Image (cartoon, rainbow, N blue to C red; front, side, top):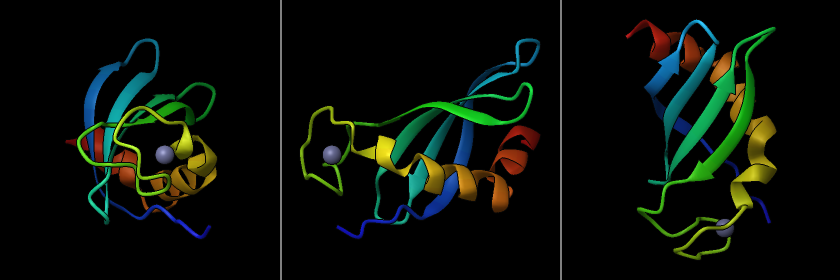
Length: 92
Ligand SMILES: [Zn+2]
């Protein structure tokens, strides 16, 4: 199984700047959308990710809740910080 998420857009859905808590909507190249929660203190860390139920899961093809995206947390985190998606999303 060689799925690899590729982020094409990130928007900030909500935030609590004082607490350093952020909610982002992540769009992927294959049309999948995910909701990710972050805590920025002491450094940016993804605390939860789930797929929005708009399209079937690209991994298991289910159209209801699954935990597949959890396996790709490292991929998501690498792109979110490495490709500056977080910085762009919170600057908007
Ligand atoms: Zn799945």
